Length: 425
Ligand code: LLP
Image 1 (cartoon, protein in one colour):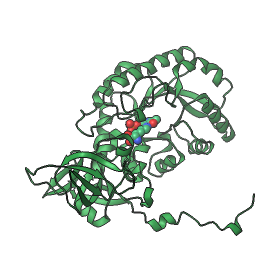
Image 2: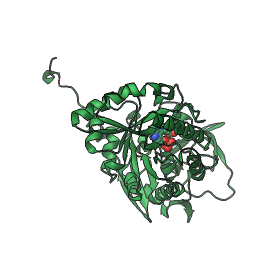
Image 3: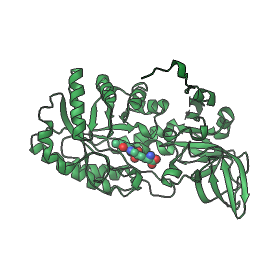
Image 4: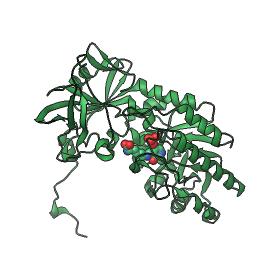
């Protein structure tokens, strides 16, 4: 956990608030985020990028709780959205439409129309097919859409294959070599204006090297397209800045700034970035209670009340999350090796294999660290488990910012069919 977590009087606290006290009040499992840490991360990035004309559009998919969006909005953040749902969340959390950018390979007509009607800053188009779609919808609405072309720079992000997005065989963006056709493709598209280029090569990237390559490529393309008469004024440099989960070195925002300076710094473009993980990951943890410790010697299974439906990253990407007891371990205590698992009926419902940690017992609280990004937003209700609460801590207080949903409410979304009343088609 990051600097905002500390043991005080034998209990793990977040900004001085006892996680045991929150667990007492809201039950387990739950997510909890530090507003102070969100601000700290936002300011660190904003400070590093201050020499440039840069807008920070938070990638809402990493954590779209409206209270989190509101904290970042108050710092000046805009949003990178990928759905109509995220548009609604951003707008209702105090992020002005003028600071919203819409990414994604499969925006529907309704989503594009909603974004245009709201007057968002920019749509990042991912294909020529989508350019035509945006043009038609903007025409129907009597508007001119401001569009950036998302380019696939074909660079290796050097990260997990499932979160790589900037290689030629990924579905994202327009291949640079297809730009030869751009003049033909946009001829006659009177309801949109190509204002810039965009890119995003992947996530959890820990060095500036792939960015240097990708930004260099986008700088080349900017010069080329300008030479062909396109008025490229904006560059959206994407997100992807990694965070330490285990013992990786911290990604340096200063190295990022240096990469920006040497590649796109002198193009006179208005720049933007779309960070998700790097702003929220270490501001949040998942708090869970040990249901029981199953002795299956030589294995010990610590079974938690949280599961892969609450935090899917270990099951989906084999990702590492530190697991830390809420009660401060006794100094010098012998570590025990556990498989830390959830109760779901799948072997992949495993948070950690052969993890050495201080001994735990039934009833103990533990946190799964660095879970503020792609935690709650990727959760599901698998095994008919109800969605869990999210809590925000700020200046020594806590607030439940998403209440626990009951299984009755979730069942209420369903209906047993009344066939007699069903329309015959
Ligand atoms: N912009 C675009 C167009 C994206 O697709 C993404 C993430 C971001 C920005 C933000 O990337 P970040 O700064 O958070 O790396 N669920 C995975 C991560 C998937 C990322 C998808 N795209 C995980 O839990 O690791």
